Length: 77
Image 1 (cartoon, rainbow, N blue to C red):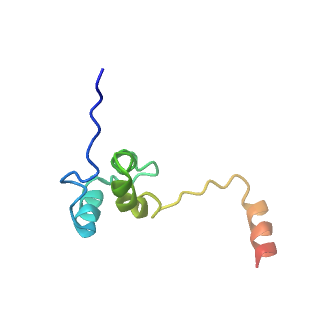
Image 2: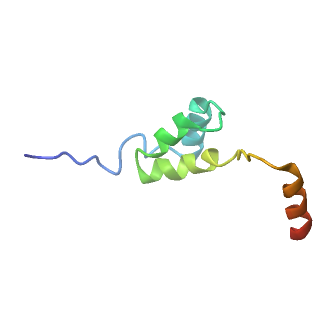
């Protein structure tokens, strides 16, 4: 059984970073999960690098106890 290994120099991976960033911008639904961008980033290392910034550009924090959060923030400052 033969396996085909994708070339690390696929046409998509050879695009300039600016173009890859625009692709990420286009497919980004800006939800908390960023499902489309994460799927894009898993296709190769170079695409992961391009999508990484967009994957983590928005972080959602869930606060269960606002009073506890306030105390923690005061200790950190």
